[in-house]
Image 1 (cartoon, rainbow, N blue to C red):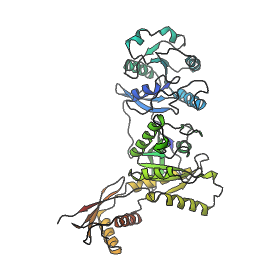
Image 2: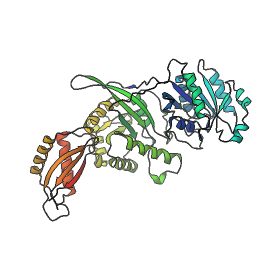
Image 3: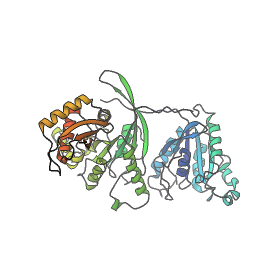
Image 4: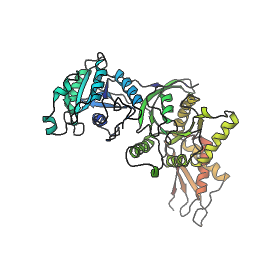
Length: 466
């Protein structure tokens, strides 16, 4: 069985943003971390799973968590799950920013949340009146309304324009310096860091798998389509043993993404923006865990996603999820299921296939060793002497076939010019061309000889000079 991974403890103090829906928490979160990480919209309940990031202020770092907006009613889907996630985040907090709206004033939701916050002992709470975007709002700001919450004076800011955000951070950092975990000057970036995205159509169980991999219920899981609206990432440490017997640690960031479906079915708005972020996550990843629902037939959406992965140069592991729901778990049936998946994705023939269940944890322990195997293959550098011998044997076995030209082509040489993914340059005789089938032959032979499991191989052709 694989060694369990543990979440990376960065030992940074934690700032948590809480508040009702539509007060601008996500806008403030993005302003603090200086990235457009969280989705921002006027739709209540846009943020569901808490977002995490790092704020750098006056040369020192702290962690900041953006939580979902609360209504304390059933108006927002997944309200109870959002409330549970918010309570978990508040327990982790060193400082809580209670974000309100300077335009609308205090509503019953703020009074309910203030009541809960007053029960939290020894946690500094700063009340923030956001959306103080202009002088009219600031001049008409009635601080006594906020004083009734029993949490001190409100801090008027504008997350959109940045007004007073620096002064707010000065006060937050003053409070953090009195805690046991203080802001840090330097954050050590892990070497050989692997970034892995979980990709799939809606409701294939990506979030259940994500929670199982990181060992914590960090993202909300439900049968509601498009529950995950934006990528959510967590840094892990995976201990493993090398063939030489050394115990090492590998840093891995897992990213749970929004389900991707056909453009024709997606309205402009939150889902569209979430899908764009998911595609961007693929481009930024080293490895993609392509999740397929094992309880349903392969769909056209699955096939389109497979085509999307082929074009990105990313290493891929195919996970057939929900295998616990399969009535037949015999080895022969498992082999047929894996062969069936491979037949639907011939362009991902390099990807290993695993049968798992995010819900029960069935065989999820096999995912980490497979990741390490694929990561090693992705960075394989073949020595030039071995490549020269490989080419000699390959051309003896099968002579190059003609492309569009009339002259018989000749392969003059081969070299590897990059890794992650592996890229090879093949030199062919001047004024000749090689048929695509021969490139496929060389790719297959490279895989047989050097085991580039899980990784695409890119072959570039260059014609030699006369």
